[in-house]
Image (cartoon, rainbow, N blue to C red; front, side):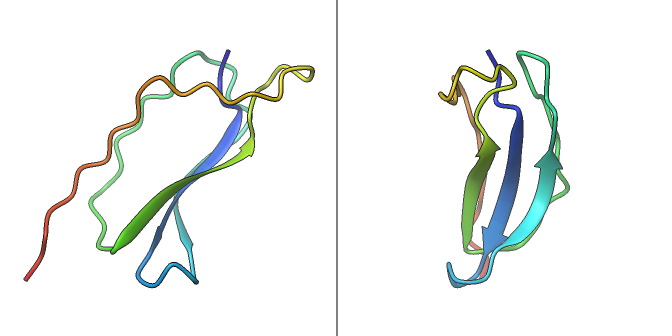
Amino acid sequence: MNTADFRLQISDDQDLWHDVDVVQGNQGRVTDRVIAPVEARFVRLFIDKPSSIEFNKDAVIYEWEVYGSVMD
C-alpha cells in the first residue's frame, strides 16, 4: 500500500497554505524525501489521493517526521 498523491504544506496563519513539496502518482511503498528548510508556524500533510489502488480508500502512513525549532 502507499499514499498516491499528497502535499506537504506550510502556513503562518492556518488560513493561507503553501505547497513545499508535492508527490503525485506514487506507486512505491516508501516515499523518502529531503526538503530544504523553510520558515513557517504550521505544517500539514494534505492527502489528495489515499492510495494508488482504486478500491482502497485508506491512507497508510507508518512514519512521518517533521523537525522544527523556535526562531527568535
